[in-house]
Length: 113
Image (cartoon, rainbow, N blue to C red; front, side, top):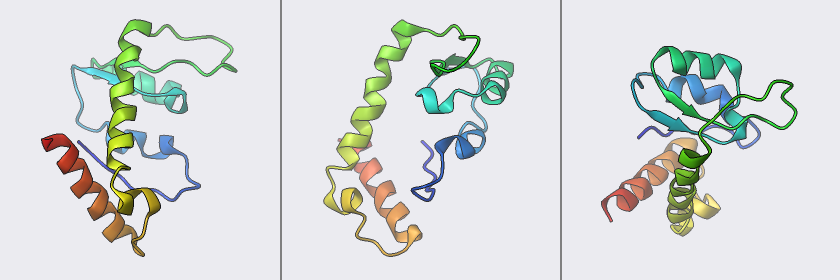
């Protein structure tokens, strides 16, 4: 599991290359925010099955596994569970380093339980 903290106004796709670094021969699920030809081609070159739906404004819609995408709710459930930790949900920590440490700790607890 990898976690990268970005500013709230920054788009998630900016960290996609770093998050997917070292991933081979598996399936990757993501939301429409990760719909990028560069990312998808990079992942497919590493034999990764991509489950990212195309944005509605894309001229040529890309094929994707609708059935496999249904399991993406597990990812959303993970975020919901770590936000059950009040300190993570309200971001009490003043520095990014301490906040990321708390998110990491909450993630470990979710993973273990």
